Amino acid sequence: MQLPENTLESARQWDAQDPLNAFREQFLIPKVEQTPIVYFTGNSLGLQPRDAGAAVEREMEDWARYGVEGHFHARHPWFSYHERFAAGEASIVGARLEEVVLMNQLTSNLHFLLISFYRPKGKRVKILMEHGPFPSDRYALASQIALHGLDPTECLVEMQPREGEQLLRTDDILAKITELGDELALVLFGGVNYFTGQAFNMEAITAKAHEMGAMAGFDLAHAAGNIPMQLHDWNVDFACWCTYKYLNSGPGSVGGAFVHQRHLKSELPRLAGWWGHDKKTRFQMGPDFSPMQTAEGWQVSNAPVFNMVIHGIALAQFVQAGMERLRTKSLMLTGYAEAIIDQINDKHLAGLQVITPRDPAQRGCQLSIVAPVKGKTIYNRLTERAVSVDWREPSVIRLAPVPMYNSFEDVFRFGQVLKECLGVK
Ligand SMILES: *Cc1c(COP(=O)(O)O)cnc(C)c1O
Image (cartoon, rainbow, N blue to C red; front, side):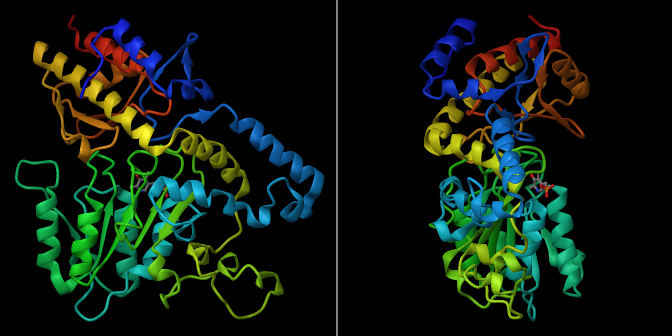
């Protein structure tokens, strides 16, 4: 892959030729003394789209003007508010319209979906998860196992990397699924691991899980808006994601959920609520639950409109930019950051180790760097110099140049600051 040279001039040239360059202007980038910081933490909390405030304001006006009648008379009636997002959401995760819904928040959605898709029976009781998952997912899985009267220490299996390795090899994951065989009820992995940045082969994992008679679900917190996916074609059973990381929809914003078409009309048990009820008869307020035959049938509550309005603005940007173009730029941005880190490291023996897969097909935009010596000091110095990255114990610095609003110049500046922080020229 061709990449810019490690000069300001080259970086700026690449920005000028970048077809997505104009999107940067549509975001509010935090500043230090008038200069926008290098914001590489869009994997934790995406930046605010410039138009979000006005969109919230319009919704507030409709509420003031219409009161309860806003459910039907607001510019975007609240009764069907979530329906506006199906097409955009489906394009982000590679789904059919009826397979996606925007509701609740991430860990809540994971729980709701586990109620339907983790059905331990006989000896088929185990859940396989990735090594070092985000803690919330582990808690959710363990508590669901306990809910069935089973023992999480026996039923929750954490896939281990080989001795001395940080990443999981696809072949080893598939072998583990085969080994668990008829004891396996569910495979639940992140689409991209939050710590290492490794993107898993969701298609292969799903196929193998199905071969063994198990379900396959994915937490896409670090995948949605980061890597292109085809959940429908890959036959994934279910998935959930948040919209405040790569999807720029604001702290704690609404979550997303995917249920594969083949399960939509099935008899899977679920936790029911009125918003999952057939919308044609919802307001007859009858006693019997009749779920919608789409992913919307998993909704329990009415839409959190003020979260969703921001997501609407952010999602429109994704639809406009397109996941393919974003991915193309992402490969170059992250490749550029990787090359610069490598250059600095090789020249100055800085002891930094990129633990994220070197193969771009196995990662999104995040790079995780182990800094075994003075890692925390390097991290602190970066932060003091207006480079926003994050720190994960015991020794990892994570950075995510996102293609929506980061520039090649950001990556160049990061490299210059990193050298300062390491005390080298
Ligand atoms: C960010 C993240 C969460 C956070 O969960 P919330 O319910 O949104 O607070 C959970 N799981 C993963 C994998 C994450 O990356």
